[in-house]
Image 1: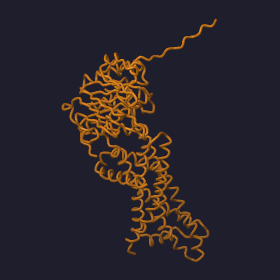
Image 2: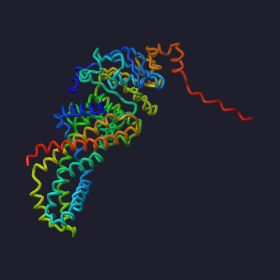
Image 3: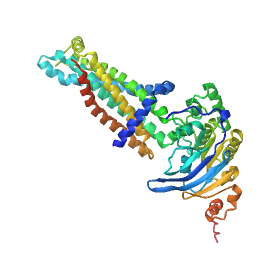
Length: 249
Length: 261
């Protein structure tokens, strides 16, 4: 395990060292961005709508019983933007994009395409890892911002349509505006950025480590997704602690 | 790892390759048991031997894809494992499977070295790619994807990709396997022509006796991870070593059909 962590950190270090070459690989970054957006946008939309909706549905009737339904906007707003959108989107992207990265790089390794790159003196880190890491660290925070907005709308829809809650759109969003501050959005943004780096680097590392045939590729994909999700959940705790430390309210 | 642009064409010449005391094992099994040989600049050096004798592993060591357990490989006296050597010399390898990048088209594969190292403008790359593809008999196949090609076609695209590099050292792993006899002869001629045209050192791993004796300046016979003999095609032909003799002369003999009475 410690060897793996060491290898991942070295890969991250070398990829960060190659960041000045990003402009040169802009076409590959663009292709990856399109791939991520195309594969995840609809899914992100559906997932976020229901996440916002289910929080409102679970807490709304109980708050309404106690006459506190006007707090629902803040409750849904904060939980979606600080926690649920970054974590759920990251898990979705780990499953959808991290697995694809590990599979693609893994099959390139198995079928000697990476060896071919090296014989042409093309560094696989520059050619394969850098564009993927840059693309996912740009795409995931944008997806999370989008997901936050859709999640809020999901909560608002349930609040206004559920007869037990019966909170209007305007009351919901008024409360949300009072409760959610820019710093709360920043928390979600910072988390999603860190999680994107984790997914990108873990998946690329797993792909580059692939050995064997199709079974080896399958193993790499599974490891990439599981390791990314475990790391996301562990880091989520420590990031939350850190971000709370900077919260001066 | 820093990558600097390869040397300009006028400064390039064929390289000398030295393999010294090369030993390699995988999972405790010794695959290369102390290999020593030297390839002169501009020479076509063919390595022959039965399957599993360590030929492909040896080739991977020569181009720096594998790290030896013991011994060293020197390109013009410099260790192949150093990035400086990789930056200084243009080297290419034609893989047995082709090893084309499946996400790219044929043209993008062939022009990859030039486009990634930004050596030529896109129009010039397109012209060179078309020229090399025509040379290997694949004119007009630029926009096809590797998945649509047969095994032989993939190998020819891989050869075109290597030709684009204008290498000082080119390694071929079974360049004529999966090819029909006509194309196999054409590839053999192209290896000879390349040597004449651009002054390149060629190391070829092959089972094909026709190819080996047709193109080689010298032939090395490898068996069970060791070099058994190195010499000119004539010297190899007249070897009395029973293993070499059998490898070079064994032929398919159909069983005689019994006459039914």
